[in-house]
Image 1: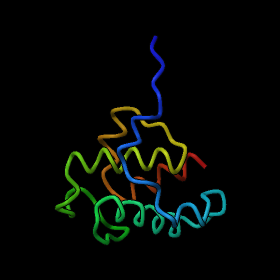
Image 2: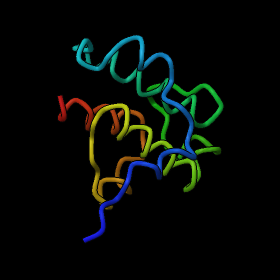
Image 3: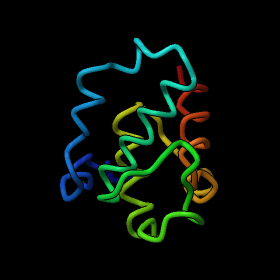
Image 4: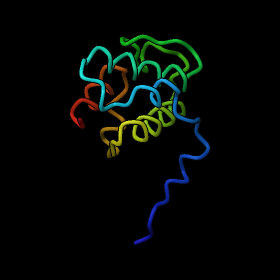
Length: 103
């Protein structure tokens, strides 16, 4: 079986500074986690979004941007998502809840 390299993430943006300066291990409050995930999504989409944002409410959150969001989320929180989770996690709250499960 061929080993998949992490280089597939290279075309995507660098992790937001907010994630580098406040490590996930220090986040205990789910609301703070939602704010951090919203910042991540905002940086990927190029527009400010809140914790209530989803693919249905943000026009720029199309299928390609969704994959960027998913890859950045996996990288930032050390989460590996299967295809079903990638499709299902289409909101800031959903991503934050998934990150909490990982903690």
